[in-house]
Length: 222
Image (cartoon, rainbow, N blue to C red; front, side):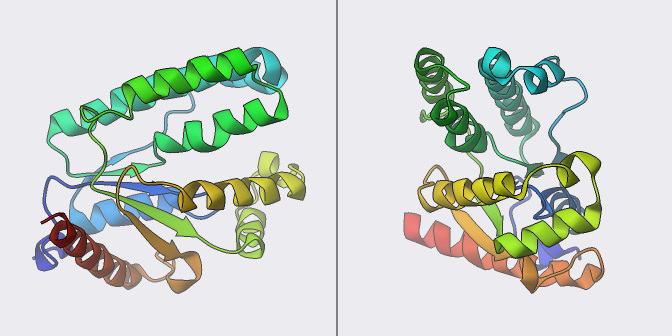
């Protein structure tokens, strides 16, 4: 009996993992998928035609980049539900509008007209009864110091060169976003309470939490 059967998690469940850079979204996605016998859905960065252009000129390409992300995530979300569920998803469609597009608008790297166009498109595509929202969003959270330490430990050059003030801002924006998020149920996990890389068995208490949380959510719907 695998953990999905042991804890009664539906085989068609769709669970999204969210959180700022460095919290371990990809690791959690992989570990949960293995534990539950689910497929994974990861963000496709290599095929993005706007990413390099965007980093060279934020103001010119921020709108194009965000629309591209929206379209790709929308297609991926549809594909997941057409498969019949059973997926763990790395990063949600909601973070783009709630955090990144808003940040560009507030910092002046996306015009008010482009931002209004983007948010109208997002609302028409995603914030409707017809869009298949995940059964659960797992939000990985930790203090700014915890996240900076993890970024330091994994040693990616681009992240190492990024000013601490940027990570501080992203941490604050993520916290503000999740505190106002209502599109689907949210389970918060503190990154200090488990270590799925060093201890494979630490995934089981997380699966147990997911099961309990999903059952409670179903009871509240009745």
